[in-house]
Image (cartoon, rainbow, N blue to C red; front, side, top):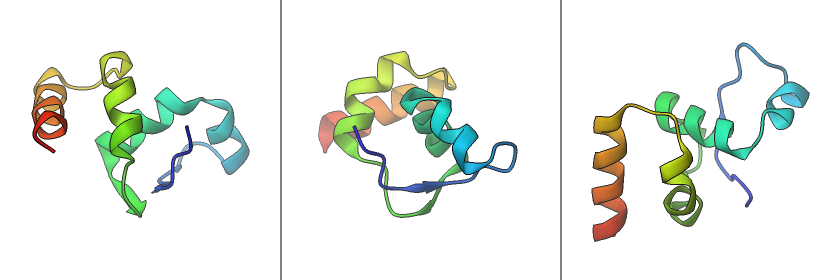
Length: 68
């Protein structure tokens, strides 16, 4: 799984962000937005149940991914 979107890492350097894992990166992208690019729908669909995000936001994303 490669995350193509560039994410904000104000509290971690690039090396620290890579060590945090893909789930953490997806959570960041969903919560704070992608600086450049888009979040890969297949990656999001595969990992949505594992993400620790707001339940309302998770339900909305699930609905979007189901229709898209």
